[in-house]
Image (cartoon, rainbow, N blue to C red):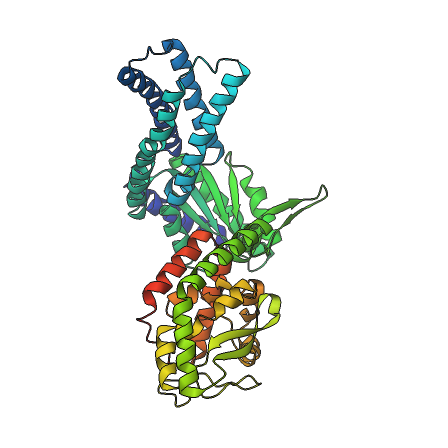
Length: 490
């Protein structure tokens, strides 16, 4: 036990040298240099776009151009405003560069903001008549399409280099307290973000004495590694319930003149991912957000009403023919009604074209199976083509359902699965839908095995967290393509 610190220091030093040798192979390019390069390129390109647009517009129309110095002043202002906005929105960070959706949104918003800023400055300085509205309109129209390809190209290059771990943007030393061997996964993930780990110190937490010796040995190894090849930061991965260990580690590492980052464990990370609330007394983090905010609920409702109304107008002749065919084959009723649970678990009657000889709506309901004798001849066609679901458009107009959302199950099935699937009830946080994310990913129809329902619930919960109008349109379009090819419906 007396030699434990020496052994730990020796092991940590060997690990440091191994990581130093591996991290020296890829290209080292400071993240600051990438940010400066991208910001400079945005500034110069924005300035060039305004100058070129002014020249092209006036040369082709034969109108005398505005004062050159005024135009230069305008273009420089636009470039500075654009870069400042992009920097404030995190566009020049690793995550900001690599996220394609975020790049498009931030760049377009920044370009729009730059032009509003120009107009506002021109209004305040009473120089609106000095600038050509035509050249500004041209610059605004062509600017975004010209700026975007550069960002996309840089992101693709960085993604390829980072995925292959051939590019190092930052260096760090790793302190790790957790399951042995898991640090290798952390190192790999950091490497894919351009962060080279220059050394690792494993912290033991078996008892107070061994923990203290382990921390001291780890800090000594970190200091030795820093003298050999300076790194930029210290990363501490430790469960947040180990308060004494974290405090002791931070006290020992305070001797290092470097920033120290404590990474959240898996449980804490979920909490910190929520929005923060400042009460003036303490900070709180949103551990569960409302599935849809008021504005989003209004937007989704308008989307449902408009599209459902158009579909009913377009499909009414088909629905009338189907109703007559059902009446001729099996008599009335044409529609099948069954109690389902909707938003917040409120019950409602769902409408379907009758496709079976039974109308079960009790405590025990048997799902339709392959070659089910209860399904009528016409019903097989209706169920295979999903035409039996069309009356649910009326449920959408009544506000009981949405076009897209978790599919509602019979109350008997809700009662059964809510007892064996912990997160099953979360599906009722939004209105049920005619189709959903689970359905287009193959999880519909009969659920003989429990895992199929678990996967369906998993997909439904992902949809609730990721909702957008764009996602709804994608699901509806994919559903339309799958209508005649789905083989999981009997």
